[in-house]
Length: 179
Image 1 (cartoon, rainbow, N blue to C red):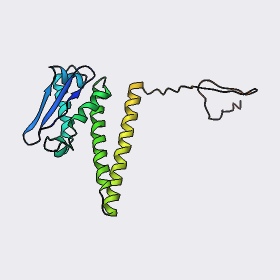
Image 2: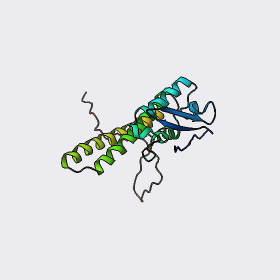
Image 3: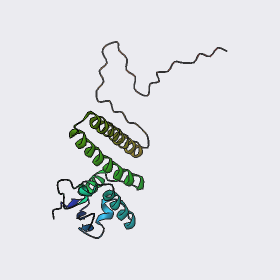
């Protein structure tokens, strides 16, 4: 049985072993490790999120019998790397991991397509998953920033006689008051 340990930034680590048939077994580096990976104080929530990470995987992607396809460690590590701050971010991190795995799976199917119908079907699936993933990344960014966009100007060069505007620029025309 091969397995790779998950290492959280906060000293937490977990190793997932098993198969869908015999069950999944998570070995934790310490009692609070799973809660630390998901950044929650609720052990039941952490266990449910761990189950969600595994549930979305194909049998071969969640089994010691297929080490080259095992995605369990990836699912946990990506949640840990995204460092969710609250319940919304925890669920989004799990969804992002699942979407990424599905997108890679779809890309593999596309690469191995042999007919035009297969290419079209797998290309469509891949494209939808890629767009979904991009939307999830944007949703996380907006959620974390409170919907605000930040633009930083690194360099401005104004030649002699030129003018620069710093601030928000509205490109709509002005209404004329005809009173």
